[in-house]
Amino acid sequence: MSRLLNIIVPCFNEEETVGPFYEEVVKLDPFFTKEDIKIEIIYVDDGSRDRTLERIKELRKQDERIRAVSFSRNFGKEAAIYAGLEHAKGDLVVLMDVDLQDPPHLLPEMIGHINAGYDSVATRRVSRKGEPPIRSFFARTFYKIMHKISKTDIVDGARDYRLMTRQVADAILSMGEYNRFTKGIFGWVGYETKWLEYENIERTRGETKWSFWKLFLYSLDGIMAFSTAPLAISSFFGMLFCVLAFLLIIVTIVRKALFGDPVSGWPSLVCIISLVGGVQMFCVGILGQYLSKTYMEVKKRPIYLVKEEI
Image (tube, rainbow, N blue to C red; front, side):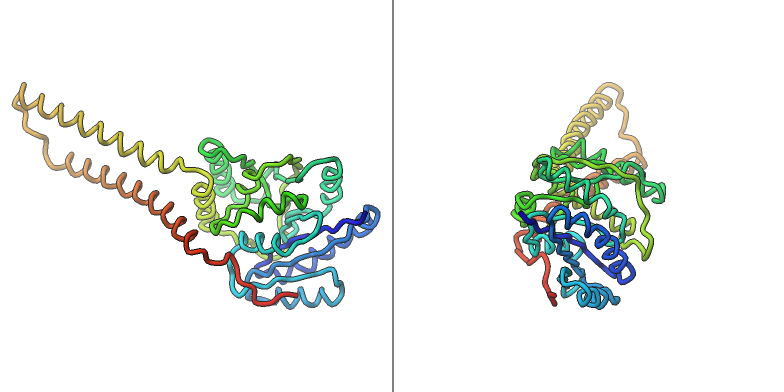
């Protein structure tokens, strides 16, 4: 029985890569024919400001298996992934980056594992060759923190490159939250997953759209979305300083009663006030982050808006 495979490809200013990506995918046509699998490539144009959409339209003239969803503006990769899943109706769905850092040649092996009974096949990088050392350090630190503070299984080096059955795709779509962190959502929905490991592949064309600052903010989204540990930390600081304040009051009274020792000068007082004030602002900032996420959720704004669909 013939099956349909939807290949979801988020794009943002990727006019140089949409063509090479398509060429790599169609090299697998003999395999798809052998397995009686029909493919459909869904490019999701995330408000690109270059000729990305024009290049996709040119490819569409060559191959009717290509579809495109173009946003009214840039909504981010998470929104593009969600849009792709909503427009995918196939028996199998795979998420891939257009820059070829997610190698298409792994697809036959991934489909083989699905045929063997797995619900999804995910990929992870076993090395970060080519990445700046500071970026790799913070990435590994993030995953270590998530393992300690979250019950959701988020694998170090995990990519968004994942093949899933219709059931898994529908489960992910059922999580219609506005603040999305896909790597956490994958782990939260569960299902039996096979992990494939491969060496990091550097992009051959174009430049990455993920700056260090954007990755930092994205990591905060992941922590807020799948852990309440920061709230517990702020509560711990509050209790700690209450206990310290109580002990200092006792020490001050005893010193005055026994030794008649006056309270020390203003430098120590300024340091204590600055420290306590800093901790208070830190805790208020944590609360503000959770409150802002809640605020965005209750407004019920759409995750994305479509300007054009091919």
